[in-house]
Length: 74
Length: 501
Image (cartoon, rainbow over all chains, first blue to last red; front, side):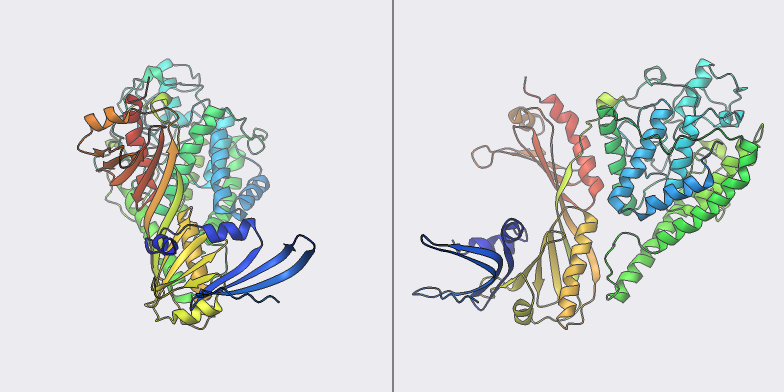
């Protein structure tokens, strides 16, 4: 399943999924290097059962790990 | 020749040139539509490969001329091969009161001419596979007004073809839609011929210089990409030079088909307006000198004379052409940035980039406008996909090159080439794929258990079509937009033959 993204790109006919996300959602920048994903989102709303947090800018750094991905927010 | 006031025409053309290429194409269409409708004729039906449009200046003048009866009988001296069905019809019917109706050539007046079509080396129009010939009687011959003349030149350069094809097909669609033509440009008081000649020459010089200047600047890309100096400007210069050379050659090859009524293509600004001015001048004379036709190609004096026009085949009826334009969905192009790249640095510093060397040895970068994806390799070569037009693909590739350059690499822009174009359309009726594969088995392969579409490999042009039961058609494998259109025009009558009852 993880190969599907690259199967598309190796054929040269990349899907525009990331850009669809950019247009539809609030994803500003994405990056993937050294197995680390970095996302920058704008105007994000974190909703939990009890509370709601609104943020102008969110940077998500995600690593692929055997245990879990780590997230930091600023 | 009836004309707008010089200021109005200039303003109209100024507005025209300030538009983007897409809007310009639409403006050309609307002018052309008005002219054609005012002349009481249909737009050119398909079945023939279309040609390039007139320059906007000429379109405006033609459009205006279509509105009013030209008092001079000079227009009747159009030889048979000059694309004026109206004149041919007028001669046949004898309805025009003005003309002594002395044909320039010894030819039957009742033969309509195909003005706006491609011509082969023998000057016969190049036809699509299944277009029919029609007699003169089936064409609509309206009042002997100035019909929008067409351009009988061979092989327009690719840049103009997109406009030409767009224009042609939007014309057909517009004719079907019964749009009210915009009249603002065409409404003007009747001005006597004689008094206007000096004005037109002034307009012409103004427009001529304006058009030449715009042409020289490489008007396609509106983004300032001057940071890529060498190859960009060189490419533009080369293209302009090549285009003008083609124009000169083509104008020489088909001089007989160019009368004072016809004008060369848009790029050939100088020659076109020379022709235009002689044409306009001739209108003020009672009888223009046949011995002194327009010199369409002064550079090559050894062209065949006006007398050698071959008759044009009649126009195919509108019902024969599909009226459907395939829409481009994807364009794949390649370019060489001509420097080694550090992909990791690019992936770390560029926005919207992915790089996973274990999976794929390239950076995958995306931009929003035009919405495209690029694969950038460490050799410096790049593939750009996802654009919807040739110009968008080129612009996107330049933007990627700019990103790479801003990261500190000495990127250039060499050998931009479109590798593949994909188009799609809908014929709007269900298709019997089984029947199609039986009769066209040497071209088709249809395995419904493998893939629900029939794969039709057309030989000329070399295009692969995916044809589905619903009537949707995908065309791919083209290097040029015209190949997509030609392939669809070839397949449409075949598909009609396999319409599901």
